[in-house]
Amino acid sequence: MNTAIKYLIWPILVAPAAYLAFAWNKLPEKVPMHYNISGEVDRYGSKNEMLAVMGILIVINIGVYFLLVNINKIDPKKKHTAENLPRMRKLAFAISIFMSALACFLIYSSLHPADKFNMQFIVIAVGLLFVIIGNYMYNIKPNYFAGLRLPWTLENEDNWKQTHLLGGKLWFAGGLLIVLAGFVLPATAQLIFLLSVAALITIIPIVYSYRLYKKQLPGTPK
Image (cartoon, rainbow, N blue to C red; front, side, top):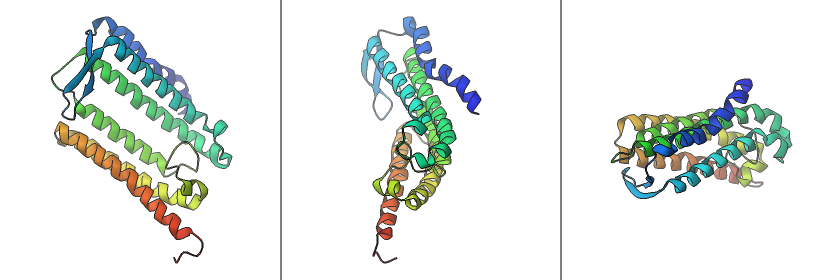
């Protein structure tokens, strides 16, 4: 797997730049830059503005990838870096695919303008990303760069473990529900459902973790 990642990652990271270069002369002078909740274009911009946005997305994608795969060199919590590294590489690879696919889809949408933006692709892709993150979350050891990095999880390994066991299950299940919603709900409802589920699967583990922290304080009744 690590060998495959090594050879595939750069084509994936630069795919949006290559696609944009190929499509540049075919793009209209005014391209959609923002959509409302119904998927309708509510702001257009120039091709140069789109170029800047794509550049930012690509730089962020590359930065996140190299941050996660070099966590063993920069994370102050050295105790678990060797255990985390294989998982971080796979997680970074999945995030890179998602970011590059999103950028390419935005370019494709600009090449083929329609009355409404196809929200289904975004919703399903986000749902699948949540499934992948949830699948790895339960097994991530304490670190400062990935996971639910709260003051009490970082200082207590048992709190970290229990919080991420719950978080992994919620993110995995929530991702599956979002994917299903992408197939059965109308476009506006898809986005509302995605945001609602994303909020719940983030807030619930944080609240659970804080309550666990309070119970673990010295002198607190069990």
